[in-house]
Image 1: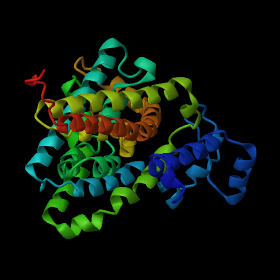
Image 2: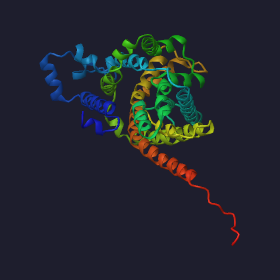
Image 3: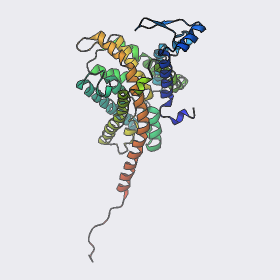
Image 4: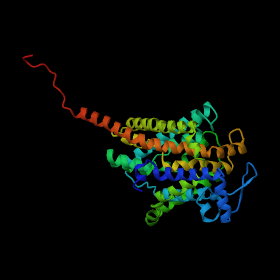
Length: 370
């Protein structure tokens, strides 16, 4: 754990990579691995693409396979219940104001950026291979832990308290909402199926402080489990694909500078002198990696485009899950490294400006002997 704490986003990134490496080895169908599994009595798995049968250690069944891609949706649902239970609106008016400004600004930037990709090319494979889902998910969902650390050091109480409103961007809700505004028609039941765990968690957290305290550890505890499960659905070489790597880094840099700058401007325009919170929230949360899968599940529940090409688009959403997940993971690491540096730079600018304001005015009126 001491080692993992030195790596940005390690609680999510490391299990994800481990899962991807294991899946890559598994899908390579190495003869000695298959022979060992056959000797142990494992059941063969039929390859849907080739029709051949292979032995895979991630598909031995039982509890072991439940911690892989098979159980990813269950683990994510647990995570969403725990996260939503910690949302709290009992904060001061100034904190609510700052939180609302940042949340809306971040979402608008995410939607605008996603729309540019959708309008300019294929929304499932746009600039640098980025999909509209990856862009909106990464840009709209901020790292609450990083935000608290940065505002705790450089901000004031209202900045820290704003996290209660900002935490609304946890999970897939805003991405689903944005896609709906951009023409995708998700049936209400698809929204409900994906968001019900968050609604349950939120209600539990509001009506019972004991339930809130009980579920609090799950906000971090479940992350490595669902990250590993998502990793087992990916091929490790996806991370080394140049387009995916460059696209993920670009997405991270754009998240920091676009969402951070617009949020900071919005805070300033609406009367806030201390605007450090704008850049402190300019990051991508580790839990954003589960959004592409959540969107694919909603699409599988009956998404239809404005033109009505429902089935094909549902399949398209499913196909982008591995690449979008990898790109968001890279963006998480990029923003975790870059966001603190930008916050420190902006805090220096604010301190310098305040120092200039506090300087006594120089009396330039000519003296009698002048």
